[in-house]
Length: 156
Image (cartoon, rainbow, N blue to C red; front, side, top):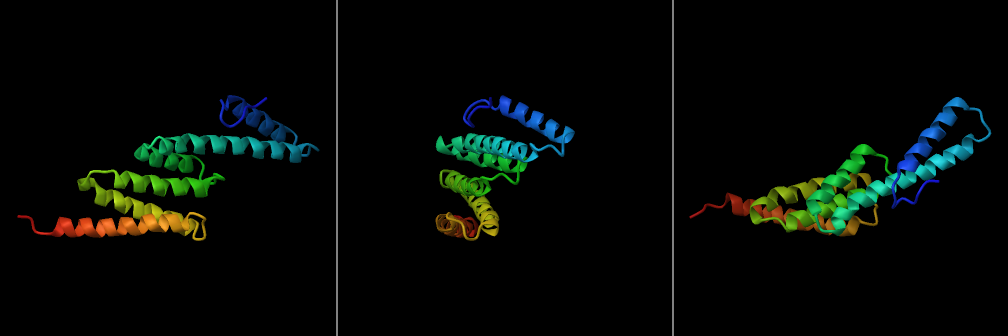
């Protein structure tokens, strides 16, 4: 009686609690494997729900909130099965936030993009997102170099 991932997940949380209680009380039951399958399905719903909720900020172009919410998803569940996608959206959100920032703030925000890119690439060097993120990374590097030269130039 749990709902699809898009809907309220209170029944999912209750089902997980009941299944865990059953597994604790009856560890040798013939139903252990089936219960583990249920738990896997229920946890997938919760993971997808949290990922999609955070990604919604990206879709509505609130890139600062998107990066923050996506990082919270990973903080709450570092082993989330959507981890690669989450990390991709963190880099993309950080990049779009930097691009749309006022010039005074861009350098520090592009440095954040570079950090997030290194986090991503260290975990997923062969990702389907590698080429796209590499382009963002190169543009962020150029932007930090240009803004660093501008900031260190003598002003009249």
